[in-house]
Amino acid sequence: KIKGPPLLLETTRSKVYTIPPTMNAFYQAIAENNRSVGLISSGDYEAAIDGQTRALSIIKKFMDLHGDQLPKTSAHRTSLDQCMTASCCTFEEDDDMQHEFLYQQGVVIPMDIHPDQDIGALVSCMIIFNFALACQLSASSSAGEEVVIANLNKAIKLYQLSFNLQRNANMDGNVLFSLAVVNNLGICHRQLHNQEDSGKCFEYVLSTLMFLTDCGEVSELYKYLDGFFFNVAHLISQPTVAPAA
Image (cartoon, rainbow, N blue to C red):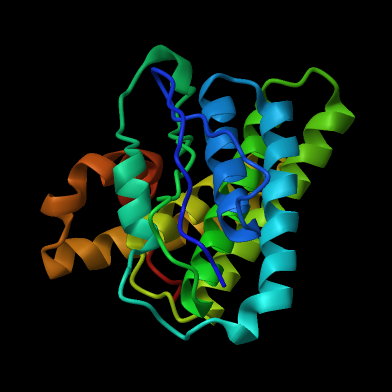
C-alpha cells in the first residue's frame, strides 16, 4: 500500500526536505528533486546533479516495479505548466544576460500529489528537466573546455528526453514547459557552435509564441514568456529575402 506524503522541513528561500527511511520511493524521488532545486538556486550545481541523478534512478525503479499496479489517473491532477508557474521564473533583463534569456528556475514538484501512471511520467519529466538545467548551469560555471562540452552535451540529451517523454505521454498543452526546454536546448547548441540546430530551436520558440499571440493567450502568460520573446526578437526583425526569379 502506498502511503501519503510525510511531514516536511522548510528553510527560508527554498524548501529543503528531509527523507525519513519510511518514505516510499515515489515521494523520496520528489524530495530529492526538490532538495536539488534548492541547490540549483544556491549555485551548487554539482551537488544538484548528484541529487537529480539519485531522483531519476529512484523514480525509474519505482515505476519499473509498481507502474503497472498504479491507477491510470487520480483525482489529484496537476500539470507541468502548473508546477513551473508555481516555481515562478519571470524575465528580468540585466547586464549579465549576455543578450540571451536562459530559463534557469528549477521546477519544484508538489508533495501532495498521489502516484498514478500519468503522474509518474510527469514527475519523471520534471526531474529530467531539472537534471538538464543543472548540467547546463554547471557548464556555464566550469573553466575546463572538456568539462563544459561534456555538460552541454549531457544537457542536450536530457532536454530532448524530457521533451520526448511529455509528448509520448500525451502531456501536450504544456506550453511553458515546451518553450523552456527548447529555448534552453537552443542555447546549448549555440554554445557548442551547432548553429543549424540552435536556429531550429529558436524557430520553434518563435512559431509557438506567434501561435499563442494569434490565439490571444499571451496576455495571461506574458510575465513568463517575455524572456522567450527577447531571445527570438532578432528572428522577428530579420528582413524577408525574395526568392530568385
